[in-house]
Image 1 (cartoon, helix red, strand yellow):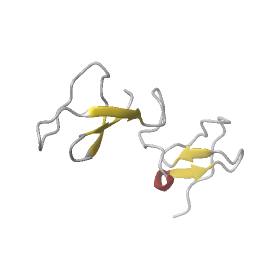
Image 2 (spheres, helix red, strand yellow):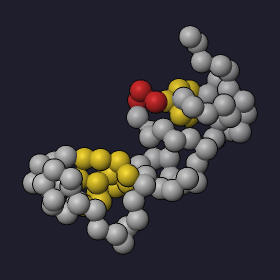
Image 3 (spheres, rainbow, N blue to C red):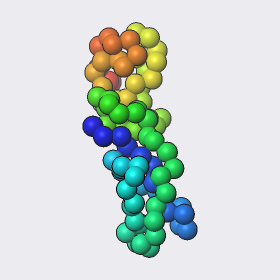
Length: 87
C-alpha cells in the first residue's frame, strides 16, 4: 500500500486524502488550483490497515491496551490476535 497524504486547496480549504507522490503536482477538480500536501496520514506505509487513524476507526487491543485500526485482526504493537469486535 502506498502512503496516504492529506492535500488541501489553499483558497477554499477543501481537503482530500490521496495516495500521492510528493514530487507530483495535484490540482483541485473544482477550482483547478494547485493543492498543497499538508501531511502524511497515519498509519505510515507499509501497513496492513487501509483506515486512517481517526477516533471512529480505532479500537484498543485487549492485550496491550494500545490503539489499533478496526480492520486489523492482529495488534500492530504487540502482534497478538485481538478479540472480535462486538456487533
